[in-house]
Length: 216
Ligand SMILES: Cc1cc2nc3c(=O)[nH]c(=O)nc-3n(C[C@H](O)[C@H](O)[C@H](O)COP(=O)(O)O)c2cc1C
Image (tube, rainbow, N blue to C red; front, side, top):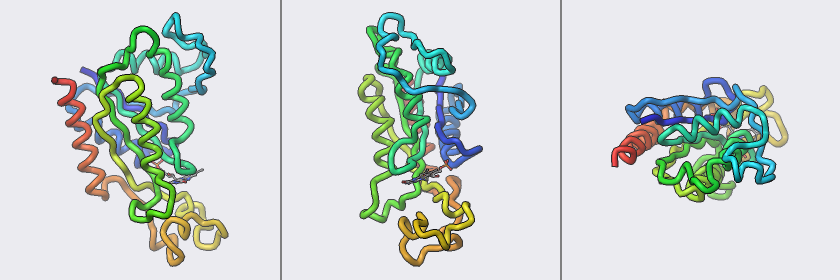
């Protein structure tokens, strides 16, 4: 049994990557971690050129990655939420899995899961529901392909304004928007997946659920 995990986070060794790796480890199975930044994957052209062949007509790394996903027994997709929805790299990858649909339904019945890193605090209900939007982008793909979506991990990520150097003076700083008028670079600080017990537990649980689903 093999579980493939695909991360759309462009940041090196990001929270998203590490949370996904924790999910894969918790499966106790053979796994493969894919960082989409290492590949070129254009979005789907909706040309339906894949219908008869189950193979995309776009000659980039999407073809090879799609074949890896077809051969895997389970899929975990990880992304982040620029402008409160699933990031475009992860979304393009998901669209390019369309060739696995026609006639065969190659993904149907396979267990799947999602990891989403966002920086909107869950407690601030006046802000867009970024993490849920990200999860929806992955979960609805899995539902529409007849997969068995077993769960999601929400990770608190870093507001870019903490690192940009202007977070305390910028007129449109995300710090104040997300954490309130008194927020500063120092008070918000750097968020790390490993220091978020709820997320760490959720990652372990998702990995174990995927392994369990593959057994039954
Ligand atoms: C262009 C851009 C826009 C962003 N907008 C949002 C946003 O609207 N909501 C949000 O939760 N995070 C937003 N973020 C922050 C990302 O969610 C954050 O960088 C992510 O948590 C980083 O995760 P990573 O370290 O795993 O890559 C944005 C980031 C970028 C680069």
